[in-house]
Image (cartoon, rainbow, N blue to C red):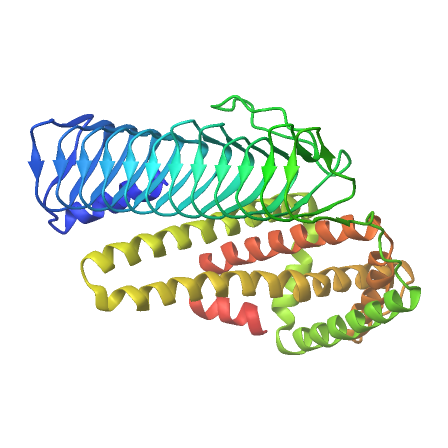
Length: 458
């Protein structure tokens, strides 16, 4: 997120925003009071004073010990809030820690997120390791998504806790419901109303964490466990392949309902369905290929020839092209978001049109690539394979260019219907075709416009 916020702040400075500071060390002293939005980028940012408006900051280390009377937007490696935020706090970093208070919502994402303060409204957190320490007080609902969630014994959540995680250890108090899904859930604390969860077992849940978690990860067994200190003051409903472990002393006031999850069994594939699918695909590829050979013969033959003469080089360029497509999509998305946010702050009338154009551009990129690899790629390989077959049987492939192609389509459909082998061949076909497209694009831009048009249509 720092990669997004930093250029955003630089863009804001370019349009003359007040209170914009960029330097290695930035400090707002304890006696300082700053009016208006405050924008800061640097290695270490420390705010001990009072900001009357919003705070936007990006840096390696951000320490907020003062007061922000509106919202804060922070991105960095380590973010610590020991002071007071009277609005919402939107945070992203490797290590995010709240020890102070947020009077609005807390939205945080990071490798590790620690809440050890007070949030007057909702909490939305996501990360590898999520921890509510003993001083954590969440006055309303909380949503948590990550690999591990832990709440210590003295924590409290005033609303409903919704969890989507690999594991969860809940030792604190939840005033309302606990709902969600996780590989393993251990309940040691109190739930004021119902518990409705889906949990796994040893076959479905195997904890996998990053190489160096910023927090100590608790050991939580798979499935549902209620320890001797657990209390559920409503109903307990859980879906699991195994029965919950309810220790002596655990208390459930309402009804306990176990909904078994049957072991997953693959749906048998009927041979007739495979045949029908391949026939449908054969017809589709055949029609598309014939149309290409009729409308764009030189382009089709050129791509085919490219694969035939330089297969390994073309395969390599295909792998590179697939990576570049993903990178291009991310760049378009980031630039669109940056432009949208900057325009919202400056020229609001252009913000939504720019967002629409960027979204359409990304959509067009993926639709175009998807159409190429699903329709045109099989045509090129079928054309190449058919020409090779004709040469092996001394058939006159020059008399009718459609015959070799149709022969190749039939053979390709038969080969790709083979389990596993067909999938591997399909991946190779995609890379070969993308590489041929890349080589064609480079050669086309190197030609004058008239020659390029002739090379396409023929």
